[in-house]
Length: 228
Image 1 (spheres, rainbow, N blue to C red):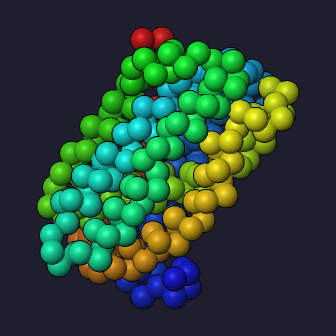
Image 2 (spheres, rainbow, N blue to C red):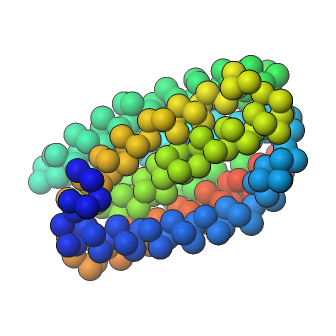
């Protein structure tokens, strides 16, 4: 399904989510780390610090998505199947990120032992809480933000990181993989939007969760430069 084939309710939800996405892009533009990347003032050490902080969110992603799937009741068995498939596809992505970290000069033990930063703690706590509610329709908003980041940003970030740090693509494979594969994930997300956004109450919940997820994701990136 493409966005053009969505039902009227799905189209309305998609338009609201697009507005959240544009707000999210503006928030990302105010993150100092990403501002330096945009200017080409980004070192390999900074990239390693980004990966070290990112790993926990990637690991926890498959956990809250799996919890989300298990919280849907029988009437949503089709939704549960799609979400379970998504969790299965992504549950070992952190291993690719670890390989990039090591290829960029980091120590495997360092990234495996690093704690969550404050933003990651907040993001994971919020998503796990929402995923534990009955029929957590609103988490489509969270998936919209996180999958959209991979689809719309990952390839550009990988190119900018390689250019700024003198890389050859050997340590930006995680980002490039998501840039290439999240288009397919977004197509599945359109199906879920059409299935789950059927009234004003659901639309409001989906959009609110998308906005919270966007803000906490930016907090996670802002906290990358803090030592814990």
